[in-house]
Structures are given as C-alpha cells and as structure tokens.
Length: 404
Image (cartoon, rainbow, N blue to C red):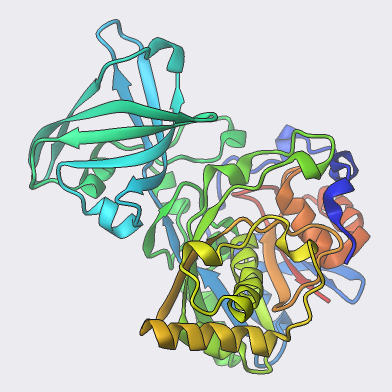
C-alpha cells in the first residue's frame, strides 16, 4: 500500500461559496436531494427514495451517538465571558459515568477568551429540576490548545448531565456562522440518537425519518448501530501542506458483539456517515492487533493514525473479526470499547465498508480525503456535479450514496 503521508492537501481543495452552505435544515428531513454515484455514473434523486438504490440484503450501519450541550458560559465580575467547551471526560473517563457524576468531574476542554482567565475559579449559578447549585470551574492542566478543567458543585442531587442540559449550549458547526437556536436542539440530532457524548452530529444521519426506515424494512434492509463520539477535531481543516503533518483527533468507539457477528455474513455493508466508516474500518485493524496481542487492554487496541499504511496487512476480514469475538468471549463482554485515530486517505484499502451515505464535506478536510479514498479521483466530478446542480453543502445540506 502506498503511504499517503506525502499527499498535498491543496489537491483536495475546491471553491465552496458561502451561499451553498446550508445554514438551516429543510423542514422535512427526508426531502433533501440525493446524489447517486455507482459504477462511474452520477445521477440524482430525492433522499426519500434511498431504499430503492441500495443493494439487496444490505446491512446499514448507523452511529447512534447524541450531541451534548457542551458549551458552558461563565461570566467574571468584570463582565468578561469565558466559554468552556467540553470535549471528552477525563475523570471519570467513561462518558456515562461522568454524566452521572454528582459533585465533581474533570473534562478536557477548549476555552474561549482564555486571556481573561488567568487563574482562580469561575462560578455559574444553576437551577435544575433537582434544585439549585453553584458550578465552579478550575484549570488544572494544559495540553496544547486544550485544558483539563475540574468542575465541582455542592448539590449531590444534581448530575453533570443535568447541569449541561440546564445551562449548556448545543455546539453547532462553526462554519454555519450563526448562534445556536432552539430549533437546533431537535434538528441537529438524528432521530435515532441515543448515547450522549458527541460535540458534533453524525450529519449523514440527519436525513433519516421513520418513513425511510419503514421503506428500508420493506426492502429487507437490516439496520444496526454502533457508537462513535464525534470530537471537535472533525471540523479542523488540514492546515499543513502535507497530511503527514496533520494529527488526527482520537474518538471513542463502542461496537456490540452482535454487530461484529453480522459483519461476518456475506452481505454488503453500507455505512451511514464518515463516523460509521471510521469505526467499521477500525475493526479490521483492532482484530489485527489481537492477532499479536490477544490479551490487550482497551487502550492497547487503539487504532493509530497511520496504522493501515505502516505495514502490509494480510489477515482476512473474517479472521480479524473472529479475533474480536474471541477477545470479547475471554473478557465476558458483549461490546468492544476502545478508541480510534484512523486516517483514511487515498491509497487506503477498504476492508468492510461497501457503500457510504454521506453529506458534502469542507474543502481540504480529512472527510474529503476519506471520500476520495473510496471513489478515487472521481470525487472532483461528484463535487462539480453537486455544485452545478444546486445541492446544499455541509452539515445541514443534502446527501449522497456512494457505491463501487
């Protein structure tokens, strides 16, 4: 496999006028446009017709993560506003346990207006259904452009999840160039979101409705779910000239054993969104790690950024997935929990995913590299078609179905 380190990100640039970025969603989710790419041919339809274009007996995989109200605004006595953007939990490190914390927890955060917060605690008065309390925030460490923030509060009847629900703000994408509105609380969540932890929505899933699900069922298309908590790094453009100098963000994943068993069947796997793609493709390399370290810890199973390219991988998908199932049996667990930093870029060999449902992505982004790795140089023709046929771009924009 050729190593993509020397790819120049400028080769994955295109002109995206601001007016083509969808600032708000359509009133009906499934009425968005759908671009179809199959066997070199490009056409278009309505997203509600998606089921008729899918391969027979396909398995569709969805990311069921739910976006949290991760932005907290504290005001100093001087009137200065300090924004704390919660990215991922540190203590407790488990998302579910951290959300249920009462009294204290520590998160890795980004801090806005940092120069106005030299030291000391910030305070925010909070009223929830379980009573009132004062929330305190304190910087305890700095990691690059992020900070470890310890949150404390006295009312043990209030959980951190309730605090975020009460005073947190939903973090819509920065490229929308607008404030979060009440409508985003519903429209910036997929209808099947369940597991809280993301700071960005898996937006390919925003088009799905119960009506579309009914049509999928009629066609015999099975649905399955996994969880990848999307980090703020998903919005970071590649700023380096070569992608070798771009560090991928780490994302936490959870995959049930039942899904891994389904992946062993011979049916085509259609990933809904790039987050599902990254999770599914990471499974192959996790199984490869287990081939050499069968008793690895969850941390030891993390897929590093360049792992797919650093050597030739000869294990079959069946062998790899079987390794994971055997590992879960030894762990007496029904789900795999670890993390991935995988970089999917041109020259990548897709192992599991046979089709992708995805929106149209930012220029010079790792998401565009992932699409190019799947369809090849034809990505330019696909995006030219979308631009010339009035498709709406980015998170609240239209969709595409990419098939080999």
